[in-house]
Length: 414
Figure (tube, rainbow, N blue to C red):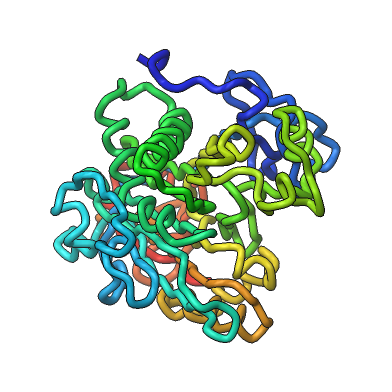
């Protein structure tokens, strides 16, 4: 069934090197010839990086994830600009299961499984912006699957219509694709198709505005949880692993030589690092009048979450223009509460004189440790004092799985 997916020319598939966390492998697809290159650490000598990077970082036997204890306040699934409503500008909305968007926080989940806590904050930046053009989506128990989640930030330009449409619909488009295609269909291909279909829907609805996008899906696969990301433009996803920032997205900008070459090869031109002298990003959703040049095919990554993965930051370029990846990670590490962390990111960006709209999502992962079920807490080979809760080293987690010990959730605070 995968052959039914939209297939774009290899030159349109986005790519970037991915830092080798434990060990990396590339999906068996053709490498993009004209795609972008980020100057990421440790892989600067890579000339033709793959358009999608898969990483195998499995060192522990992690059980399925729960969405319990998410800290979302009263935030809806998607956020429209200040003062806006769903009827403004007649933004068309796809049909959505009301159960999927109405109850963002599910506190009925059992607490003794891994999960995540989520915070979100935004600011129009009133000193520099008259309108708020960002939107976001936060969906827990995605597609009715306990422990799965979808998170996204959409940064609009030339109006709010595209970002608002994406905030209400992209997660539904992806969910429909997951139901439509066989389970073995690669999720990155489905993300690509979801973005292509989003472009098609907006073109049919005569939406001429555009937006950058960064989206992630946390999926439970037996005893593992996999993190998938997709982005177009310069909205960014950054993972914190043992205190180190790892970028999971790719900045599609006119200043990127590979992306600039792709634009020229497609018949466009670059002026002051802008596509046809107009648009600063080289990939986006919407922007119908420039779609032959400014494509919607995303850069994608996938990796297996491990106990060293502390949190994920999704944010628009208003944050990243004034904060480096590591600076943002350091700030979030100082806040155990993800809602407070998201607020601190936005406030720091304002203090650093950002001139753009600001939106940030912080997803803090709660991992599982193993607790011995026998009295006394410790057995031969255990070297942890106290009540028998052991440090989640690969050896101990593997041993716990073999011995049939029960699981307890433990969040590793930064």
